[in-house]
Image (cartoon, rainbow, N blue to C red):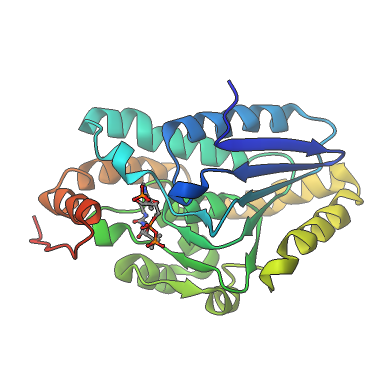
Length: 260
Ligand code: COA
């Protein structure tokens, strides 16, 4: 299965995954998740690919999970499939042997930020904005955001972002260590390419072992958080507030939350 909505191109040692659903700001639907998983298989097995770039077309990297799609799922579909699928697929990228660089060309929200957090490094275009807007819909980040954000920026900043849903611009994100570098938009692809080439020129075994060692140092935390996030994510998606949040989004109005 290949999808027009996510494209994989291989160019020598550099692979590029492009989220290509520009008219929906690259919101992730199940077809895109399946394509991402298929490409993770290809990349995982490749002896030739040394670096993976991941980016989006248009004005967004990705604005998160497709609200229209997930809001039609039953609670069991949500817990057994949607949330588990995202966790499994994003973890595949986090655990790829090769370094993965997320190239944030614009809006990076919700599930899009969770995908970027699964990468090893993040480059951001100067105007990029990052946020976890889930609480504005009455739900929580369910694809690893509550787990990976705090590890990167510390619990206090993670709580600020996740509790408020406020956008963080590229400068703040860089200061917080959420992105590695800010690059003027028109130079982003070139800088990503340069960095990928610099990494690809290094000993691949050394690079890949370094990745595993750095990740192993941070991994002593068990899988309990992912299980909790799956359960809480399923639950939170079916509150009255989640219904109100989705309705408000569909109707393009401000939500009125009741705390139920
Ligand atoms: N899921 C599904 N569709 C989405 C989407 C999402 N997460 N985010 C945006 N879209 C769609 C819009 O519905 C619109 O589709 P349409 O043209 O068929 O109406 C299209 O993408 C463009 O978005 P639009 O809202 O018109 O662009 P904008 O520049 O005015 O606003 C955002 C951009 C990102 C601020 C706004 O789309 C937004 O808040 N999206 C929701 C982000 C979110 O809550 N993510 C977490 C999801 S769990």
